[in-house]
Figure 1 (cartoon, rainbow, N blue to C red):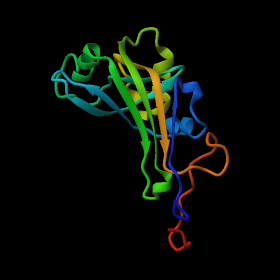
Figure 2 (cartoon, rainbow, N blue to C red):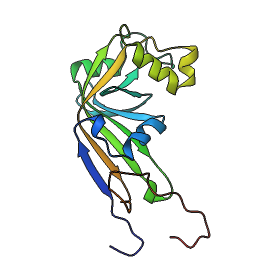
Figure 3 (tube, rainbow, N blue to C red):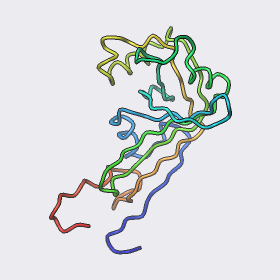
Length: 175
Protein backbone atom coordinates (compact mmCIF):
# COMPACT_ATOMS: atom_id res chain seq x y z
CA UNK A 1 0.00 0.00 0.00
CA UNK A 2 1.31 3.47 -0.87
CA UNK A 3 2.73 5.65 1.93
CA UNK A 4 0.04 7.74 3.58
CA UNK A 5 -2.69 5.30 2.50
CA UNK A 6 -4.76 3.50 5.09
CA UNK A 7 -6.20 0.04 4.80
CA UNK A 8 -9.99 -0.16 5.17
CA UNK A 9 -11.40 -2.21 8.04
CA UNK A 10 -14.45 -4.46 7.79
CA UNK A 11 -15.81 -6.29 10.82
CA UNK A 12 -18.85 -8.49 11.23
CA UNK A 13 -20.48 -9.06 14.61
CA UNK A 14 -23.68 -10.79 15.71
CA UNK A 15 -25.13 -8.27 18.19
CA UNK A 16 -25.17 -4.55 18.88
CA UNK A 17 -23.31 -5.22 22.14
CA UNK A 18 -20.35 -6.53 20.10
CA UNK A 19 -19.91 -3.41 17.94
CA UNK A 20 -16.37 -2.11 17.59
CA UNK A 21 -15.66 0.97 19.71
CA UNK A 22 -15.93 3.42 16.79
CA UNK A 23 -19.26 2.04 15.50
CA UNK A 24 -21.52 2.76 18.48
CA UNK A 25 -20.85 6.54 18.32
CA UNK A 26 -21.65 6.45 14.60
CA UNK A 27 -25.10 5.00 15.40
CA UNK A 28 -25.60 7.57 18.15
CA UNK A 29 -24.46 10.63 16.19
CA UNK A 30 -25.84 10.13 12.69
CA UNK A 31 -29.46 11.20 12.35
CA UNK A 32 -30.59 9.43 9.18
CA UNK A 33 -30.49 5.75 8.34
CA UNK A 34 -31.43 3.95 5.14
CA UNK A 35 -33.80 1.01 5.35
CA UNK A 36 -33.32 -1.62 2.67
CA UNK A 37 -36.26 -3.90 1.93
CA UNK A 38 -38.01 -5.73 -0.91
CA UNK A 39 -41.15 -4.28 -2.51
CA UNK A 40 -44.28 -6.07 -3.78
CA UNK A 41 -42.69 -6.70 -7.19
CA UNK A 42 -39.55 -8.26 -5.69
CA UNK A 43 -37.32 -5.24 -6.29
CA UNK A 44 -34.95 -3.80 -3.67
CA UNK A 45 -35.91 -0.43 -2.22
CA UNK A 46 -33.96 1.88 0.08
CA UNK A 47 -35.80 4.49 2.16
CA UNK A 48 -34.40 7.18 4.47
CA UNK A 49 -35.74 6.76 8.01
CA UNK A 50 -35.38 8.15 11.49
CA UNK A 51 -34.13 5.55 13.95
CA UNK A 52 -32.97 4.72 17.45
CA UNK A 53 -31.11 1.78 18.93
CA UNK A 54 -32.91 0.45 21.99
CA UNK A 55 -31.65 -2.63 23.78
CA UNK A 56 -30.79 -5.26 21.17
CA UNK A 57 -32.65 -3.83 18.16
CA UNK A 58 -32.82 -0.90 15.77
CA UNK A 59 -36.19 0.86 15.70
CA UNK A 60 -37.97 3.24 13.34
CA UNK A 61 -41.50 4.63 13.40
CA UNK A 62 -44.27 5.64 11.10
CA UNK A 63 -44.70 9.29 11.96
CA UNK A 64 -46.57 12.38 10.79
CA UNK A 65 -44.26 13.34 7.93
CA UNK A 66 -46.33 13.87 4.76
CA UNK A 67 -47.34 10.60 3.06
CA UNK A 68 -48.69 10.07 -0.45
CA UNK A 69 -51.43 7.67 0.58
CA UNK A 70 -53.49 7.25 3.71
CA UNK A 71 -53.74 3.82 5.28
CA UNK A 72 -51.15 1.07 5.38
CA UNK A 73 -47.83 2.46 4.14
CA UNK A 74 -45.96 0.57 1.45
CA UNK A 75 -42.93 -0.06 3.70
CA UNK A 76 -45.18 -1.53 6.40
CA UNK A 77 -46.92 -3.75 3.86
CA UNK A 78 -43.60 -4.82 2.34
CA UNK A 79 -42.03 -5.67 5.71
CA UNK A 80 -45.06 -7.67 6.79
CA UNK A 81 -44.81 -9.73 3.59
CA UNK A 82 -40.98 -9.95 3.43
CA UNK A 83 -39.38 -9.13 6.81
CA UNK A 84 -35.76 -9.62 5.69
CA UNK A 85 -34.25 -6.12 5.74
CA UNK A 86 -31.17 -4.03 6.46
CA UNK A 87 -30.58 -0.66 8.09
CA UNK A 88 -27.49 1.27 7.00
CA UNK A 89 -26.12 4.24 8.93
CA UNK A 90 -23.21 5.98 7.24
CA UNK A 91 -20.90 8.94 7.52
CA UNK A 92 -19.73 10.65 4.36
CA UNK A 93 -16.84 13.08 4.42
CA UNK A 94 -14.83 14.71 1.65
CA UNK A 95 -11.81 13.36 3.54
CA UNK A 96 -12.33 9.77 2.47
CA UNK A 97 -10.28 8.51 5.43
CA UNK A 98 -13.33 9.41 7.56
CA UNK A 99 -15.84 7.34 5.58
CA UNK A 100 -17.64 4.73 7.68
CA UNK A 101 -20.86 2.76 7.84
CA UNK A 102 -22.70 0.24 9.98
CA UNK A 103 -25.23 -2.09 8.39
CA UNK A 104 -27.65 -4.05 10.56
CA UNK A 105 -28.95 -7.05 8.64
CA UNK A 106 -31.86 -9.04 10.00
CA UNK A 107 -35.57 -9.44 10.28
CA UNK A 108 -38.05 -6.61 10.80
CA UNK A 109 -41.33 -6.78 12.65
CA UNK A 110 -44.18 -4.28 12.58
CA UNK A 111 -45.25 -3.65 16.18
CA UNK A 112 -47.69 -1.40 18.00
CA UNK A 113 -46.48 1.57 20.05
CA UNK A 114 -48.33 0.17 23.09
CA UNK A 115 -45.84 -1.29 25.59
CA UNK A 116 -42.90 0.29 23.73
CA UNK A 117 -42.59 3.53 25.68
CA UNK A 118 -38.77 3.23 25.87
CA UNK A 119 -38.60 3.21 22.07
CA UNK A 120 -40.83 6.28 21.75
CA UNK A 121 -38.76 8.04 24.43
CA UNK A 122 -35.53 7.22 22.56
CA UNK A 123 -36.94 8.57 19.29
CA UNK A 124 -38.18 11.73 21.04
CA UNK A 125 -34.72 12.25 22.55
CA UNK A 126 -33.12 12.04 19.06
CA UNK A 127 -35.60 14.13 17.04
CA UNK A 128 -37.04 17.49 18.15
CA UNK A 129 -40.02 17.09 15.81
CA UNK A 130 -41.15 14.07 17.84
CA UNK A 131 -41.30 16.17 21.02
CA UNK A 132 -44.20 18.11 19.51
CA UNK A 133 -45.75 15.16 17.66
CA UNK A 134 -44.68 11.75 18.99
CA UNK A 135 -44.92 8.96 16.41
CA UNK A 136 -48.31 7.26 16.48
CA UNK A 137 -46.90 4.16 14.87
CA UNK A 138 -46.67 1.50 14.05
CA UNK A 139 -43.05 0.89 15.00
CA UNK A 140 -40.56 -1.09 12.93
CA UNK A 141 -38.19 -3.29 14.97
CA UNK A 142 -35.13 -4.70 13.21
CA UNK A 143 -33.61 -7.66 15.07
CA UNK A 144 -30.00 -8.16 13.92
CA UNK A 145 -28.87 -11.47 12.44
CA UNK A 146 -25.46 -9.93 11.88
CA UNK A 147 -23.96 -6.46 11.66
CA UNK A 148 -21.31 -5.38 9.17
CA UNK A 149 -19.12 -2.42 10.14
CA UNK A 150 -16.78 -0.71 7.69
CA UNK A 151 -14.48 2.27 7.90
CA UNK A 152 -12.02 3.60 5.40
CA UNK A 153 -8.97 3.84 7.62
CA UNK A 154 -7.43 1.50 10.15
CA UNK A 155 -6.19 3.31 13.23
CA UNK A 156 -2.85 3.01 14.99
CA UNK A 157 -4.18 1.40 18.17
CA UNK A 158 -6.61 -1.45 18.56
CA UNK A 159 -8.82 -2.10 15.57
CA UNK A 160 -11.85 -1.75 17.84
CA UNK A 161 -11.09 1.48 19.63
CA UNK A 162 -11.24 5.14 18.90
CA UNK A 163 -12.75 7.42 16.30
CA UNK A 164 -11.85 7.59 12.66
CA UNK A 165 -9.08 10.06 11.77
CA UNK A 166 -9.82 13.74 12.31
CA UNK A 167 -10.32 15.82 9.16
CA UNK A 168 -7.29 17.65 7.86
CA UNK A 169 -7.28 21.34 7.08
CA UNK A 170 -6.25 22.76 3.74
CA UNK A 171 -2.62 23.72 3.49
CA UNK A 172 -1.33 21.32 6.13
CA UNK A 173 0.65 19.29 3.63
CA UNK A 174 -1.59 16.24 3.77
CA UNK A 175 -3.00 14.60 0.70
